[in-house]
Length: 335
Length: 242
Ligand SMILES: Nc1ncnc2c1ncn2[C@@H]1O[C@H](COP(=O)(O)OP(=O)(O)O)[C@@H](O)[C@H]1O
Ligand SMILES: [Mg+2]
Figure 1 (tube, rainbow over the protein chains, first blue to last red):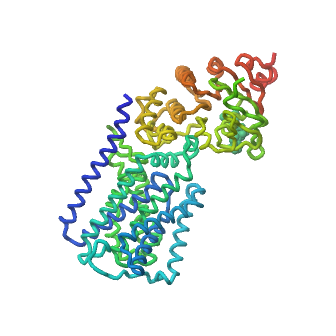
Figure 2 (cartoon, rainbow over the protein chains, first blue to last red):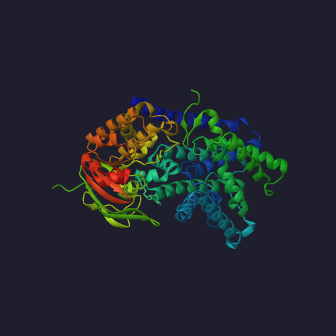
Figure 3 (cartoon, rainbow over the protein chains, first blue to last red):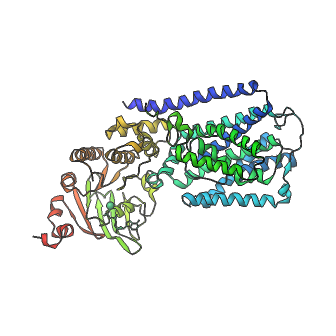
């Protein structure tokens, strides 16, 4: 009787690993089957945002701290790795760790004052911090100010993450990134931290009475979340070969990092990946059809999407598969 | 005489202009079930909040096993062995019953497998084994009360504070609750319980402390406090005093 319950959680986690491994194999084969650079490029973006949103989900989903400033950590990652590469010749495969460390540290610095705020105030505060970051970089000549930085091509190399055949290697680089972000989420979801985050999100007073240190719990989630985002920023910079303030520190990027998790299912393991697979193609098509992301039309489309989703499927697209709950407890609806 | 497990000395607490607790002192001996009674607004839940570290008393001290714990905060109090339930249930609604209780058992068992085994043990003890995988959101109100007891027990407390866990239950459910409380005490846990249902409470408790308007009115055996004229006056008004 009691053994059956243990079985449920453990079986669920083993199934998640198996599905994840199967998906990984499929995604390794997929780009070989689709030689079109356009589709391969789309796959790069889907995987990038899957990883980014998986990182956002650790803090915003499991721990319930909705951040609208994750572009700050993304931008720090992008600029750190790029500056280390262009100024000091340090390869981006090392620079991305520095970018991740800085992203995590920045998330801690933002969390320190802001985690004392509740609910919406936290979201607004992160938004403000994000905009401050954008303004600082826009006016800082040493990092290229508004012009940004173009990353010169040195040589075809995995160490430098630079390739003449542009897209295909990045499919695999981003796949590794998304897979690692997923694995981190899977690990923390089953750990003491994962339980504590969900408890803090549901009822912080009750969690405290059980010995949960609320503030350090949030800080741990922020550090992991910021670090994953920073690494994504570094990879993005090498993929595009050019960074400037709006494309790495912009508000719409902060929204776009959060959206896949929100659309796919907040606080679920598969939500960010599913959301990115649906949302990024829609976003790319809307940019192609409406021309440029600058007009804010894309933001209006996301806003509309969120509204429709909130009304029709508040638990996210993942609930269509019978998976519900804040951390993907697989409960099949109607048996 | 053995040192009391809990020693409350001159505790006062006000919220704005409202004096929720005024100069309250009493002790609780290890192994006993103490009833904390008094009309609505008497300050029972406020006192629980002070004991559990959720609020800091304005004056006075609270000692657990001789060490001052008042003002240390809820996390330190939980770590030192104080478990509690809430008058208005605070379950983690996006989590299953088992996951709720595991949040408690993680306090003393960092490993997920060990925490799960401990939680399942407590859930079985509380008679909820068949409901372990049900989301807390879908539990019935009496089950949610048991969830809170199980969650607190999973932290392996020495002192358990139960705030109106039998209120609103049917007589059968309340009897099941009484059996559970006795079983908890038999495990060596000291209990302070707040309850309004006197016919359920009086046979269960070893001793009672009565609060009224934030002050301690009296304390003693259950039989002696219900005959105390001050208590009758507080509950029913002057004309019922013989
Ligand atoms: N956090 C709080 N803020 C303001 N007033 C409070 C708070 N907690 C309790 N009180 C007040 O303290 C008094 C005692 O409340 P309480 O301890 O809940 O009584 P009881 O549990 O005996 O019914 C009430 O007047 C209540 O309004
Ligand atoms: Mg009360």
